[in-house]
Amino acid sequence: MSAVSNLNLLTQHLGHKFSDEGLLLQALTHASAATTKDHDNQRLEFLGDRVLGLVISQALFEADRAAREGQLAPRLNALVRKETCAEVAEQINLGEALKLGRSEMRSGGRRKTALLGDAMEAVIAAVYLDAGFAAAQEMILRLWGNRIETAQARASDPKSTLQEWAQARGLPPPEYAELSRSGPDHQPVFVVEAMLTNGCSATGEAASKKMAQVLAATALLEILKDVT
Image (cartoon, rainbow, N blue to C red; front, side):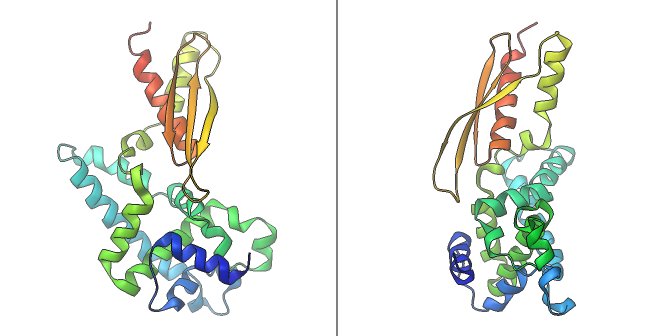
């Protein structure tokens, strides 16, 4: 697919038509491909990180009115960390539109978590500068989707907890099996089953295989509360 096609497809996934397309191009330009320091996406990344933080903070605040600061903070960190930004970037095939230097392309830069996460934040800033906070907020909430609802699970580490539960009872580590994948490439839905050799199992459904495993582990831990 050509660079123009990749850019057009990304714009469709973002759901935003840029008045100043130069902002988007800068957001997608890694330092390895920039002609000058002012033309890469690092400054936009800085701004986008703050816009993302505000949008997600407000969404979490409104989603759980009873949660205290100590409960909201880890949920926020889970939703704005680089890995989650990269996960969203992969969801919309942002890597295919990145402008990288030759060395980064050779080393698989289009799939690197750090590069994808940084670029996602830069794109958020580009939308914010192009059309204002409301446009950036709408895009973030749409792309992050049910991650906000599952923020509590993301903030914890149920997979490690489940493994510790199994080990404490002399059982092998849990196994995870992908039961199905549906939906378009840019918005997949994975169903994963977490299983223990004692016969207990549970499933999780999410937009990434990793998160589906987390939710499956969370569901299985709920079942195991009554198991000695």
